[in-house]
Length: 418
Length: 183
Image 1 (cartoon, helix red, strand yellow):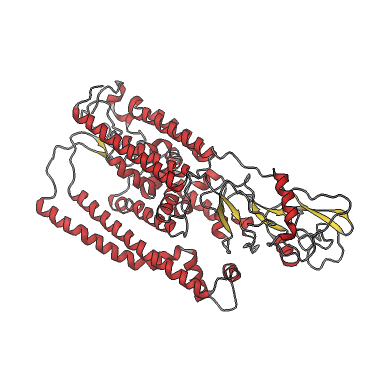
Image 2 (cartoon, each protein chain N blue to C red):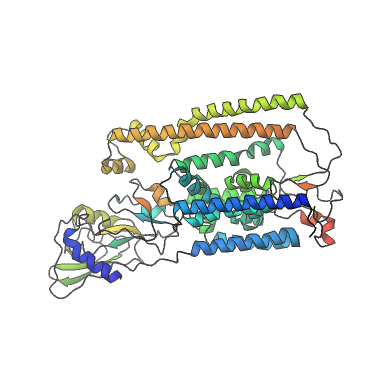
């Protein structure tokens, strides 16, 4: 078949239009035949589907590990497998975290293609999270696994540091979606600290960036998961409403307090006798008014910062370069642009479109962040009090490190339904 | 397993939500046509041989290689993709070669034609031969991403760095953009 194509190409060679043809093509007299440029080798198209099958199997086994066997050891070995398979073998790409980008891009821009395997890899951990909590984070995610593996000490961060850091994931999510939809860049991939490790390659800045995160992960538990991961934010939402969730005790909790401090992220709610609400009815109403104010304020600030955020886009950057550049000295990009035949006016028109898109997107982003701040404030003021020791349904990544501290575990069997 | 009515309704509604999400997945798949994952390719007509293909790939040895479109080649004795500019004695010695790794092999075919073959194991995708060939020759040499080397990152670092935005996604059904073909 390939020989046929080559023969056809040679036959059509007088009619080729994309070559310079300064020198005439030879007609050989001694019977020389032109070699084939190369053989087309492609790996099987269904490899992504094998990975998805493995992902589903890993998730099912981890459900069993968390809920039936209730064993940290099981979870550890499952996450080790995930690290080796999804991380080092599959080089960490395509991953569910990154899949946010093509999914949101193609949802917004109808022309963009979206492979079915990417759709699957985006939705499957979310569906599992809706039923069983963030078991993807604890068992299947290679990024989580590498952070878990190198964690030696788990420093407790002060509240004033941890609270603002925890706000980064939704902001990053919004920014990543905006950049993907506008076709500027894949920010999640760009700022993925562990992918260089999995690909076992990279330049010096990538090495430093990854190195910093690995070092951080040694002393802080799961810094990427808690303070950066945009997909984790999505999983938090479904996990909060999940049907079943990891629980520390396999039977009815007896408030023995032995699990206090066993969570490296501090996501355990301690049992408390106090059941008074910190905020009364009037206070709640005030806060409810405050929320739309925050939302509009956020939208305003967002809209104003649209121009700045748009600098992420290469077209905006090129237009800025051209405007501010020294006349006569052209960068590679400007030279290449001038070769494309697109006029300066057209570029500036494109730039205006991109800027408008970023302003609109940033306004929505600001609205979203403002709303989120308001909801967080409400949550903080109206603290829930817990009768028994429970994990935080949104924050717990189902790593199972708290299992070892529960004495009820030892007696074995998970025969009760909570 | 004892299940009371409340729990039954709960399980039912969650299952409904799960089925809804599955349906969403299916609908999205249908709308987007169940396509396979795409591959990266350089558009040879946009390439300006800036040299970034050699350095920007995440792999240590770039997935980009120089490919020779033999049907376009002039088979010249004085090949501007093989020889450095201003070379006086045409030899196969490294001092006369443009290629820093001597990846281009020159062999005599018949008078006055010479065959130039690229040893892909040696090629580092610096683009020097491509530049020479497109500037003074027929432009039969061009850089292209080899799919058996490329690990198909979601975000191609070479694509991001390319000044002429020559790297784009292509369907698996047309895995290569080659010179000497109508695109």
